Image (cartoon, rainbow, N blue to C red; front, top):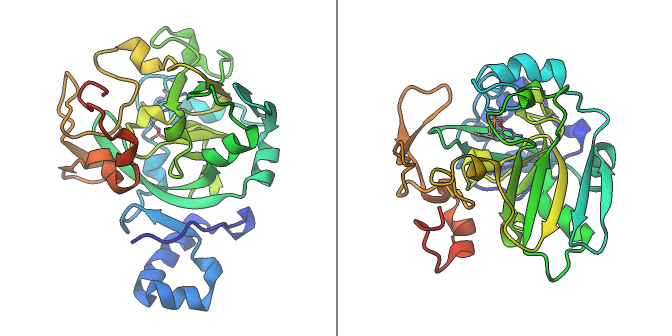
Length: 301
Ligand code: MTE
């Protein structure tokens, strides 16, 4: 079931335990009745088909964040220790009429936080259901007034080996970079996330601000962003630089296009035993399939 995106203030966001209770309560009471009782309770917009969110401790204990090591446990161990997410600013630059360097505080003042539950599917065939807090990237891009020549958006993570010790290793080219076509970036599902479960973004999940593109493999959702640049041609992306035949620019979740080394047809939710079928565009076909009309998705993987 899908509800309209809410618009809760930070003070209205509920702690995790209450939040889960609230969800079962809402389910039991019936959403319409609950909404009539207290519209403010219905803050989260569910884009995950009513599925139960993955517990917070799984989302914060099993991560990919190569700036802190290549195994799944290192980000939780090292990111909170080394990463300083305050003060932080994000530059919006390139082919825009109004370039601007935004502090995180300014961003949260100008763009009210919404709570949105998305499925996230990693290229390694694990997945999660995550209640994000954030705002649509489109709102920020519109403020910057993209010029007609702008066709793509290039994102960059912080480069600072003192705060990100993994950048001393040459496992990837640093800083981590990602990109979207402008229409993908402007799509309402594309989120700049500043929190999960109503809490500020944990360091290992990409504090203080990260991208979330729920119909693409998880690696497109670049963490700890410092630059968003509007550009004319397709920007380089970290995993494509690293292994072009394995990771393309689009990287839409596609059960029919296997990774050269493994199948992409099934996945396992964090914390679950059994695999489930992977859905085209991670289940967001209705929303996004039109972006790729007429494109050969095998060639544009
Ligand atoms: N962003 C940066 N800067 N560095 C990374 O190593 N890993 C990506 C993506 N964003 C990564 C990154 C990958 S491979 C995935 S699957 C997701 O983050 C994982 O997000 P999560 O750890 O919050 O689940």
